[in-house]
Image (cartoon, rainbow, N blue to C red; front, side, top):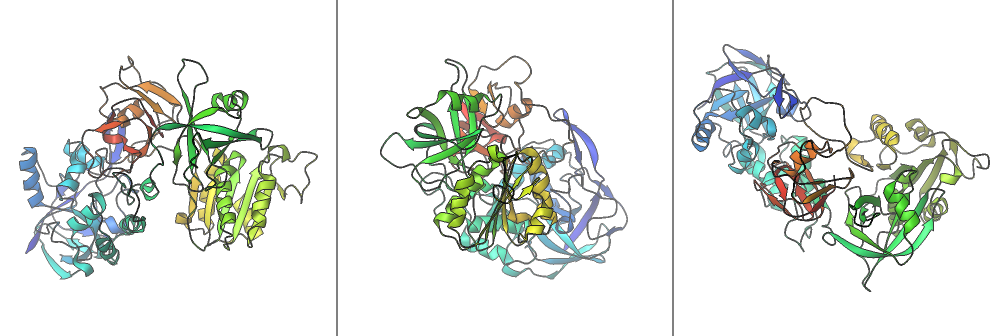
Length: 591
């Protein structure tokens, strides 16, 4: 008979870490006497980061005393106390390889249901003073698991744990944990796991992404990556490694400030097709002998034309855009990395909303091209905002594409129409795109929305669309420049522009953060590329910091890396896990 050995609770507190402050509830202490377990947690307990922990399906974390003994021997430690692994219930019994998701147990007055394995993050390593802990819990198949509270009630250390129901499919916690995190994701087991009603929605979404990945993903290369953890792994691998020369075969003015470059291969072979919405990264050398300038530009033309077209807005002080417009001519060569990006048009029958402003029209224009080429019968809305007619690129082109679609609509807003702009002909409304305007136009709610535009547009419109009944999963966004950082639990501080790290420069390979426009030499004093990015205030995304969760997975545009420690599951070809990798040569990261 399994037994509840200890109830452990703790409220979130601020903890210093790596020069930052982490707000975390991972420090739990054993309590005596009965405690009431409620729908979201135990009386006296709390979570610091409700995005990653807590909630109905993660109300109570369970860990086993047998795993305590295992880790004491494995790590050579004898200082463990109840709550050492951040768990609420320390139990005797209920091993991860026997307990199944969907099993139900009675403890004291309360009834619980197993919903998912623990999602490991860096905070368990912080509590354990063992940075590798997140990876060790997964690789040694001892993650622990979460309970959902079916019946609230009082529990107390010493209570027996009685199984009252078995979960369908009989898939253990350890099996489902390995199915997501470890290499190999058999489709039959994914299908079985998705038939378990108790499995939390977050895990269901990850396993569904693995199941939906095309069977041939990564067939030509060594690693297909983990689509359940990194969206980039769901798409095809880059068509070529690093940068290759492409020839400029056409230059077109699209508006007062926007121009397009058409690129073709230097050999007779057509360029590989890109997905509508992807981007190219170009490497420029404006100054002879100076450092390269690297920028990314969305593809704006037909995705299967055998050639690529990028459209660029010349910024007043833009080094790259000015160089492209003033120095390059038809016939010149441009160093280009293969098409990348996860902001791509998805198949389906739902209506499509293509919403953009300014130069943000470029990726959604490629989507409009794809829909027109397929003569799609989907309801398509082309919704665009710009300043005035002189800054309205692709007006004729988008109109011609819309004419090829039987169920297409177009609406254009000018924020400051010029005297010669004609309302009802050149544009529909003086002002900006808004949810209120979309409502007046009768734009459907059950639609797939794709948005790209300047910062204010991207800050305001996506959340407004979700608030207006559009499903969050149906709102897809593309951000020019660096993405927002993801630093779970770390107290926010004022953002600073990327900069070289403090102290003497390193003497290692050059590391370029492409989106941030920064190149710095590697210094082996840093344990990982993530630590270098943090030292440079380059926005990065991470969670486990040990090669498990793939949150940090980033595009490796060129160069080679090594891993220490090795990741639990390899990233997709052309990507890198920056939390546990170091450069072997000069490299360019899509950060």
